[in-house]
Image 1 (tube, one colour):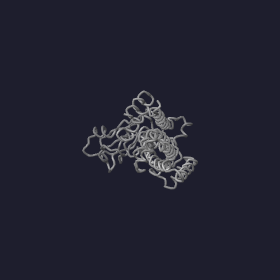
Image 2 (spheres, helix red, strand yellow; image 1 turned 90 degrees about the vertical axis):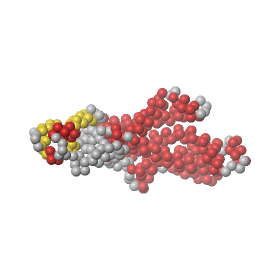
Image 3 (cartoon, rainbow, N blue to C red; image 1 turned 45 degrees about the horizontal axis):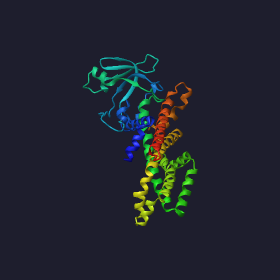
Image 4 (tube, one colour; image 1 turned 60 degrees about the vertical axis):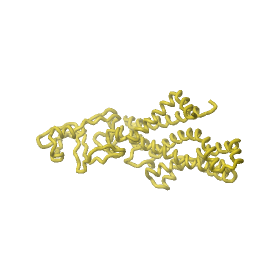
Length: 358
């Protein structure tokens, strides 16, 4: 009943629905990224240096020369190993037993030769042309290594969504644990935990994340854990305040008189009171985690190449703002901004929808 009333309130906020839809869309594309993107290689790392830094809407012909490990393409939530050699070309000539082509960007009249023997022997010349010569379209252009920017952007959303979930889960577990203990037991336990919260809170978030990351080692999951370990203090402080207030309610005092165990009082009667405020703060922590990870990747401490992340994409191309190709930086920058903004709008709307005074 409470959930239905909250959802009815939330539906009246157009921007909240737009934000929620956008977040769900990003989550969907993150999970099924490799079914959406044109470049299905692992981490969308297919490089074409001859077509680097091309603008959105760029297209060219790609000649694919099969390698010895050519595998059948199938449904996968992870990238595929691509042993084919993809060559951007600007001109091609078909002969009886070979292909002559000029690489993209080649200003000379030099043509390279590829024998038909490199292709499956059962294929005719027309079948080779149909299967191995493609006109590739780059929706958002290419990065400085000639990789498909759209594919890197979509796969990079996995980092942002994943780190948000991991950070929120870690912050909820630690924050609820310390906040519940401090608020319920009080005394020297409360004072010690509050001191610990204040100490952690006084350290700049980015500095602490860097220190934890260096201690755990640079890597994919180390960054996730480091970000999560810096965000539990807000949850703990909020939980502590809620528990201290709830502890003075008549139904809690009645439970103590009836002999209910402390565990039963905390889990069955106090914990449900904290759920609504924690949902709101979790959306804020989700947005903060995305920003922190982007900052770490920009500094080179986040996800390591060739794993794409929005922060590292900004880092790789921020100099291009002054070189007449700002889209290379603006595209991932706008992606970070819109996702963080969506979580903040949703959090504010949830706060209003869950407020019993409204």
